[in-house]
Image 1 (cartoon, rainbow, N blue to C red):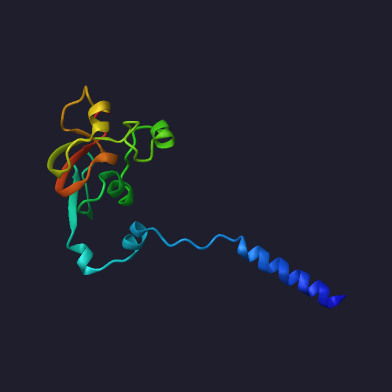
Image 2: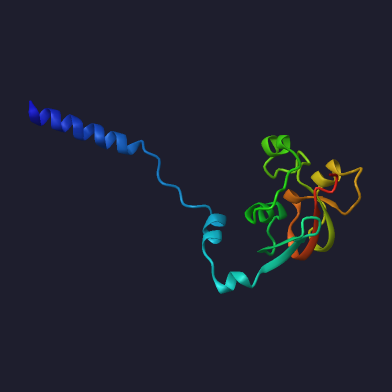
Length: 142
């Protein structure tokens, strides 16, 4: 009787292990962010937020919104923007900035739609790739 119970328990353990999800690897972005080296420092660019008097560095080619959040800079205007933003999808317009100078990507179709009535220097931080040093004004409508 005991051996039958042990066999049944062993079968259940084997069955349970077949249904456990395999551990997924860490996304590449998290792997890269967690590794600091002198090589990755070569691609860092300086971003200045003129109306806040702050500067931070971020990796060249990364999204402005990500760099602002990683450096602890406020991105959204209101609590509603903080709670109900589109998480970088270019759909809500709550991460609006003004690029005063510098090397950034061109406007996307989402930006052209959402910012049609704004000056061409207004951008969505979630859609802006930083390709070199730049100066921005955060929350230009405030």
